[in-house]
Structure formats: C-alpha cells, structure tokens
Length: 252
Length: 252
Image (tube, rainbow over all chains, first blue to last red; front, side, top):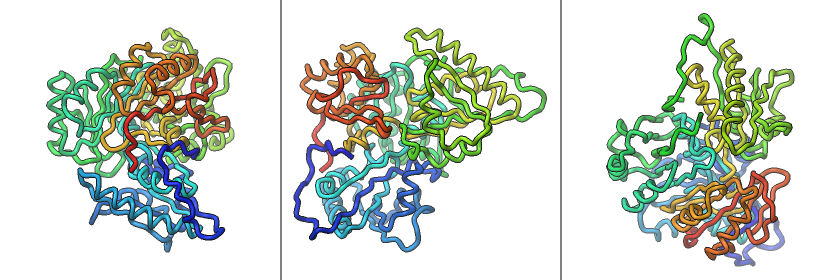
C-alpha cells in the first residue's frame, strides 16, 4: 500500500500514546465459492482476532458467509451496516460510524481484517473505509477474484483477447450512455443489473446484440444461473451481470 | 463450464474406446505473489499429475514460476511454447501443437492442469487451448486475481465505484482510438505498455491527465514498481499498466 489516494484524512494525534497502531487489511474474498479465496486472504482471516464486514440493514452479510469457515471462534466481529439507498448521505454516515468503530480498535493496537466480496477496490464498500482510515493507520489491500472473472470462467467465454478493449458498465447508467459505450467496445460487461435488466435487454435487442449476450447470476454460488440473455429471468438480483463479446471470435 | 463458445471443435471419435477422458483445468494463478493463488487452484495444482504452462521461446515461464512451490516432484510437465510475434500464424501453429499434445494426455484419461498468469480469460493464452479442446474434452476454468486488481490494491486506488464506468485499453491501440476511449471513461486501465509507453504518456500529457495517472510494473512480484506516471521509466515491460481515475473522488 503506497498511498496514492489524493484525499486522506491525516488528522494525526488520534493514536493514543506511543502504542503501535493495528493494521487495517481490506481482504477480497472472491465471487462466492469459498475455495476462490486466496491463500493470503485465508491466512489473514484464520489468524484474525478482529474481523469486520459490511451488511445491508436486517440482512445477512455475503462477505461474512463466504469467509465463515475460516473465522476462528470467539473473535471480535464488527458489523458495518450500510443502507442501500440512491442518496449518498445515509451510506456516508454509515461509513463514518463504521470507520470510527474500526479506528478505535486499530488505535488500541489491534489489527482488523475487513471482509470484502469479490475484489476490495472493484465496486466494493471497502474504499469508503480506506478513504476514512488510510491517513491515520497502516492499510494493506489484498486483491480478490472479481465477479467478472468468475462469470467468464463459468460461462466459458473470454473477457478480452489480444488488443481488444473492454468496457465495464453499471446498468443504472442512462440508456443513451449505455448505447454509446456498447457500440464503441469490443467486449462489454454490464454490472448491477437488478431492476435495470428490462432496459438493458431492450437496448441489446435494439442493437441486434441480444443473441450474443450471456446472463450470469451469482456465479460460483449455490444459486448460480447462466443462460443466454434471451432466456434470463424477468427480474435480476443485484449480483448479476451480462457478458457480451461483439468482435470476431479471437480464439482461433 | 457450460460451454457457450460459439466455435468448438466437436470432432467426435477422437476419444479412444470407452475410456473416460481427463479434465482440462485452466487455472488462474493471480498476478505473481504465490500467496494470491486461490485455495482451489492450490488444491488442483498440488494434486495434479500433469501440468502444462505457456512460455516464450527460450524464456522461463512466469506461470510456472508462480506455481513452482505447489507442483509435486515427478509430475509430467508440458511446455507450450508460444512465439511472441505480431502476426498470428506462428502463435496459432504453436497452440495447435500444444493442444494436440495436451489432447493426447486427456484422451488417455489423465487430467491436465494448465497454469495461467492472472486470470485465464483476461488476455490469457488459455483461451486458445480452450477453443481447440473444449469440444472434445470436459473443461473447467478456475478464475484468478487479475493484474488489474493487484495494481489497484498495491497503489491504493479504486478501479471503479458506484456507477462509474471503466475502460480496459491495450496500449498497442492506435493513438486516436486511445484518446477517444480515455475521454469517454471515468476510470481507465491501459494494459500491455511495453514499447508503447512513450506514446501513451505523450497522449495523457496532451489530455492534461498525466498527473492523475499511476504507473505500476509487475505488481506483487519482487521487482514491483509503483509511481506517478511522470516518474515512470522510459522503457516499460509487457507486464506493466497505467491506472487513471478521471472522475471526482468517489470515496467520501
């Protein structure tokens, strides 16, 4: 962790006395199959005395579920509850509170392992804790397997080959913008489908690309779904995406 | 592996007698640190009786080096030599030969674990074997941590947050095309820099973005380099990339 973040909160003075602060580990857990956790993540989780994880209010934490078999009995667990709202203020307040709680543990000299679905810095919640804590405490990020790589592996299609360019597009983007990006790219992954699936599907149909698109839901998890987009369910969960290759087949 | 590849070579009849064929595993090893191998990849490599790996002529194989500590003594190792040429025919012939050799082992009922740097389907050589063998043999792809995730983790910058879109661009693309894509995206990763670094750097300077760009070389490997692009070496290896965030800081 070399700290190229432009905004850190180097407030100073918050570490009490001369105590060596704990290290904050942001640990990627991969897409869901606990065997897709890295050796390093498994080692850190197994040795952790304090783990923290994000969860929506009232819901179980997917991150904690993926790592469950590795967490030692009796460790301190910190739940960071993040409201899933379109407005940013409630989530920001939740991250402020979570960072304060984790910061207290770090200031007391104890390491904290923060569990992250997929990769910590690819659409993850860890970056919001990083921005709040990196100026005051040592931080190490352990990258993980993204849902993107998992979906490609399970569907058996390449993400990108040779000099192809790939666009990663969140489905909530306006339709006109999605259209421009899809038209301009060789390979496209459309993330966070949820209630935006009908919009995306209609757009791909209009572009004559629906038949080339693959729908993947909860890759490597027990409830995994993989099918041509034309056979996708009408309603998609948040953890679903579309893979689309437009170029000629680069395989041969 | 559900097999959505459009071109497979379902030749049939190539599996001798009634022998159950072996499984081809395409196993991602992550960016270089052997601890970033997944538990699943480590298990498969440790149990393998036949491993295969790509290498440039006369060079050591990075994939084999990453996995070296996990390969049991005395296993059969198949080297797939792939010439690094701009023309495709020499590499295609090499993949044909490698696939034929691996296919013989699979047809004899033995599993083959093919070692892949990073993720097998993200600019990897495995996809060329997949296209040649998937029609005739069972294949399973094990996703790995990409160099992209590793670079972001080591540099401490997010790849993408919230509804940001990310473009993955190979540096060999023409300058005008790189320019258009960079202008249109919130977050950009420029891969495969090599001898194209001066072109990319001049372009980013011209766009007023050089100061925001981070250069990362061989992330998580012993020779790792991370610095602002303005301090990057004049000559970059193939395993280097630039991370660039253009949007407002999404962290807070």
